[in-house]
Amino acid sequence: MKTLFITFFLLLTNSALVNAQDPHRFDEDMKKFNKITAPEDVVVFTGSSSIRFWDDLAEDCSKMEVINTGFGGSHMSDLLYFIDETVLRFMPSKVYIYEGDNDIASNKRPRQILKTTKKVTKRIITEIPNVQIRYISAKPSPSRWAYKEQYERFNRLLKRYCNKKGQLDFIDVWNPMLTEYGRPKPHIFVEDSLHMNRQGYLIWKDIICRDSE
Image (cartoon, rainbow, N blue to C red; front, side, top):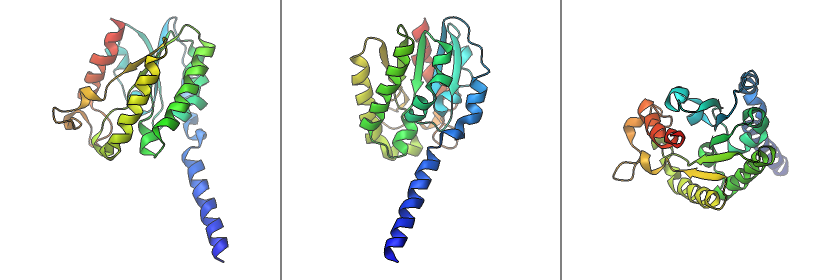
């Protein structure tokens, strides 16, 4: 009886993990992206909800022709799975990627995320050899501050990786979003203390969009 219970528990746990990473949860997002017509020399911003909710992206980065293919709740592995729909079909000259935030909060190891990041990079560069890829660091947020050390480790690994590749750049948003005491600035987040308000995105604008100037 005990063996049957353990077997049932393992099956239930595995089922929950599969459902949590079910790519079909993004079907509606992908249908929307498939309707987008890309202009020439387009710049793609993709990743999880911090990109998805950047409503003023086109205005903030007005010197770029931008497409936003952010899909909330995504992990780096989801981006790899949907790389055709979110990036490759647009043949962009630049790609800005924000992933890793949800990965860490789901207890994925930083090196595991980096391994998937390398696969994402390879897929993009193989299809678009002259592309420039900008990886945006994980951001600090009050609601996920318990994962601070894991985020910092992931950011260090990501920065080191980008510094070794000529077509990659690392964009640090972690430090500019901290107070002088080293904590996340509380006034730049909405009520959930995870997603940014307009003040948060203005910090991103100053760091990320100046790249086009």
